[in-house]
Length: 113
Length: 114
Image (cartoon, rainbow over all chains, first blue to last red; front, side):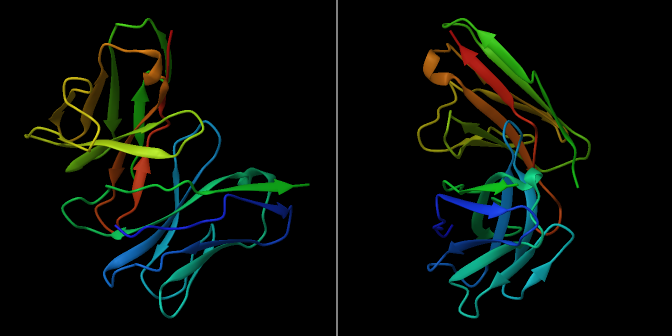
């Protein structure tokens, strides 16, 4: 699985958009970009994933660059409950080792009042 | 989605003893995954548990220390054997959805070894 690089920490004001970047310059053509978050003392929670097109769901939007070497997770209106560690992972979906994810250090997002 | 229940949620154990962690999923899944999260660290995959075959361990993890059972498609156990304080971590069970490659995690078992 491709390696990812994320900033160690970010702050965001409550109600504003939080934009979390991720670099994955060695991503392969069949690897997806997944985002998870881990709120303190809980198991990681799936947020969103995509291959090459931008994606949006009820939680967030995912913007993937045309060359797929980087992506940005957008939380449109951050709340205090969005304070968490956000992990960007790239991996193939549906292969024999499906679910075998390599977690980097992630970005600690702190949403401030 | 998948709902995963882990037991116990936390425990404090004496060094030299063993603890078995249970993971129950509300649907049948082919593979289940066990992760370790040491204090202040990210998640590290311990092993992949397939039903009907032996678990596959990642580098640095061995069956004698972390034996795994997978008796059916909805249940797995991870045992942390002969514990030392270095084993103090959160242990997480995970499964993948049938489509889309999304992973779902249990709430974890917070283990403290004294």
